[in-house]
Image (tube, rainbow over all chains, first blue to last red):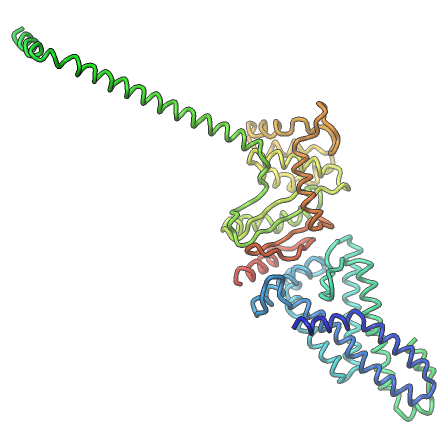
Length: 208
Length: 250
């Protein structure tokens, strides 16, 4: 379990480098069919990267607190602890915070697996982007309100809700997610034949 | 007369026994008297010892905790009396918690002072709370400080609310603890000595720096000696209670 978490966290924290490098590579390819094929591979990898972010975040929220063994009861403790973090944003009522704390980790598992599976990627990527934007709005709100709280992101060491968390989430999580969404929609809307006939500009514009 | 003579005559006949018996009786009475007085003296000395112990206790470190140390959950809270979030936490979360889970022995609540430099009267308020804690009036003063935070936060008249929270005699004891605490924090007092209460506040602050406390309120929850990660900011009582219940069901 710890190894899986370490792998997921590593992909979540460093995957954006590979994804951005892949985007540059796609833009450098001139031949339309090759570009399209490379883009498809990149989207599959991007789905795994963005999906890993959600899976790592869910793991961080559900894993037992230090000193507790893996069990349903310890998971309940972790969820209760996450409810405290959600409420510390002072956006939601206690009941709503509790609901979010109980639903969000499982929703993240679902979304992570959906992204990794590649099914209806444009929708899963779009949903992931919306969720990331929601997180960033919450962090911005906490920072604007002067709250010095743990962002409760669940990935890596605790980060205070503020510019550092915004930069991290923006660069590592939101940017790959946006690029994945654009790429998935572009691939879906552009038939293979059309791509071969009328290639690059749209791709370059949408991915840059 | 006869009777008397008769008795006399009988006593005379046993005259050789009378003197030792009287001596023994005298010794017994004397012994009892001495015993009673020594018991009285023991009682008095115990009373004096208790008085001394109380005096020593009042000079000991301030007790800023609620509940039983044997409680399965320990919650350590780092707060500043002038911080609005800390007041919010105290009024809406800690107060119901004290009357519920602390009273029933489930939680042991420890207060740590962490006055922030940005608050003008926060340190002074912490001094009053520590002075009150040394004479066993911490809970009354903590409540009074948070209940009237806006008022003393505006004019700095903390004494008014501390005195209103207890009897006149108790307040005199608190005032005695505050002797030498007129100088601002960190400065030497009039006699060249700093406020003796400052060392307790600084000790709490040092504990907070090790956590590390980034903002107030920050709290650390321990379950059966197992420290959980620190958390900061406001948490409502229903959410905290749910967390405690999940810990207690472990």
